[in-house]
Image 1 (tube, rainbow, N blue to C red):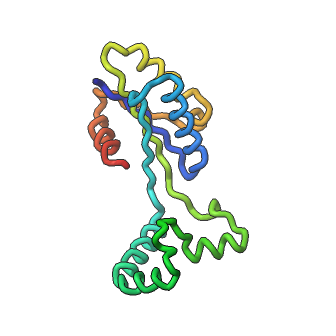
Image 2 (cartoon, rainbow, N blue to C red):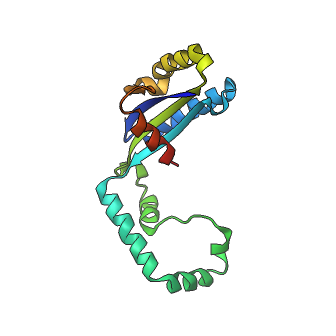
Length: 162
């Protein structure tokens, strides 16, 4: 089967990217496309946040005993598995500051069309339709087909994304 990729760069607009994901999921369900239409996100974090995340990971790795004692002080709260907000996010929430003011990651949406060789007309119709629909038409689309030089790199990137 020949894959084709549509790449949309939403910049820092996470809300529109999520709207695009919902749109693709509704198409998959409504048209019974199954795995013929797959969507993945590529997020590039700003450099400042990467450095802060690495420092937090190093600090948490140094003190595993303190984590255990802190969890036991809360009387089993850690056993529920719920995520807790960081103290900085709690402070901002208390002040009424929105998370949107923080610099968000650069979001790229990659849509893979996986139609078989005898479905060329369906493939072409989806390649024409997706960039003209509402959440996608506000950003520029890059179409990468199997014979294109950057196809191998895009295919590898798509497979590595979670």
